[in-house]
Amino acid sequence: MRTSEVIIIALVTVALGAGGVFAVLLSPPMSPCSGVTGAIRSFTIIVDLTGYNGSKYQTGPWPMVTAQRCDTVVFTVVNNDTQPHGFAVASYSNVGLELVGGDHQKLQFQATRIGQFRIYCTINCSVHILMQNGLLNVT
Ligand SMILES: [Cu+2]
Image (cartoon, rainbow, N blue to C red; front, side, top):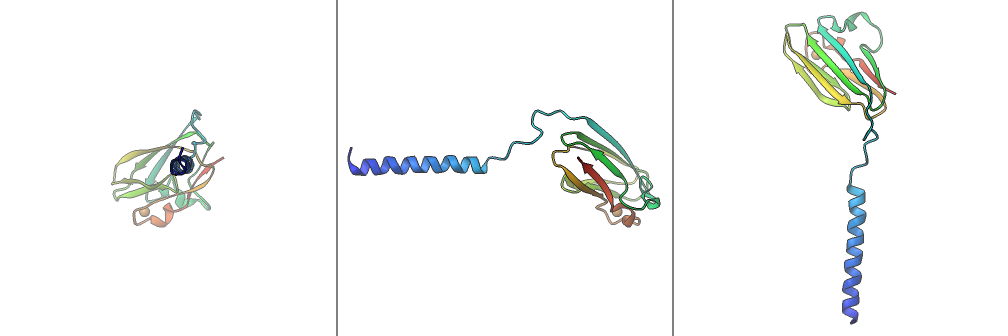
């Protein structure tokens, strides 16, 4: 083999190797819950002028809900008010739901990450302050 051929083969080998390394670096990490079927945790959230499930009358985070990692969390959000309200869960659903008066919707996701995640309204309603301090606790 000529020297130039050896160099080309060497360059190709290095390039392929680098590509492999990049492919490993760029591929997303395996979900910690792949192949894991957790429990289904269902929660109903009633939204009205007392906040989320009467959060007006609570001190500290409210509503407070708990799931284990890899559980499927299902919120059923019922807007019993006449004005629109939002329902978001930090990190899991920052966009969340928007519900006009009288609407009800579900928000569902798998709780793949451990931690504490704020639940809050995303629409500037008349009782917004009452809907800023919910908590999802994933253990
Ligand atoms: Cu609001």
